[in-house]
Amino acid sequence: MFKKRNILVLFLMFTALLMKPNELLKKAETAYDSKNYKKAIEAYEQLVKEGYNSDRLFYNLGNAYYRDNQLGKAIYNYERAKKINSQDADIQNNLGIAYSKTVDKIETKENFFVSAVKSSVLCSCSTNTWAWLSILALCLTVLFLYLFISGSSVAFKRISFFSALIFIVGFFITYSLGYSALKDKQQHNFAIITAAQTKVFIEPTQAASSKFSLHEGTRVRLLELNADWVLIKLENGNEGWLKATDVGVF
Image 1 (cartoon, rainbow, N blue to C red):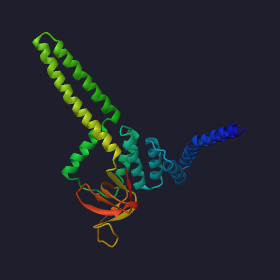
Image 2 (cartoon, helix red, strand yellow; image 1 turned 135 degrees about the vertical axis):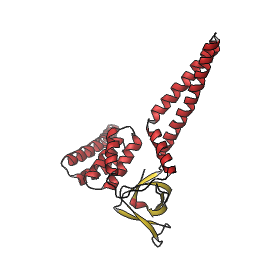
Image 3 (cartoon, rainbow, N blue to C red; image 1 turned 45 degrees about the vertical axis):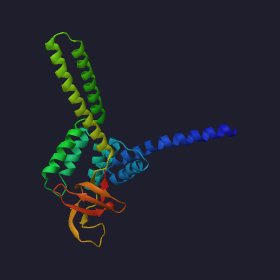
């Protein structure tokens, strides 16, 4: 009897754990549909706090923040969604609309332009797609090497050899891009200003002189992070420290 009771308790606990995220999700969706965006944000944030994350969750949370006129947090969550699923057209569209409403318009240096191009290339395919492309290139390399070895005519051997060279180069390129995309996905290299306005200081202390101010939604490169302060770099090359509570790292 004691064992049966324990099994029943475990079953009820397991069922409750499965139902809780569904209840929170339903609560968030109902609140959003009713235009009660603060309540929707609360429910979505609770799901995130409990360890649930997906591109849809962050996308919906971003929409709720956007409707609640919290632009910085909206962009932050759109970026989190994009990091999981960079191919989603809805995420890209809403992120573009949100960025167009930011206050800070920062000029881009050439090295940042190169970095942006690299980021676009990495995001052009998912990590799984890069992996499959590298496997395909490797298989084609092996195939053409086999044809080169087994071929009889000089012309056929020549075509097979150069084809193998092309695909082995393709393998190394796709493998490198896939590895870089995976590494970029796992690292936290950027942050979004989530506070309405924040000061950037010369040193990580409020007693230091402030260099300039930034507004919500501005994307910054993350150079250093500790419990209270982050060292950031702008696209124009300017650097400085700001409070960790004023940014969302992704």
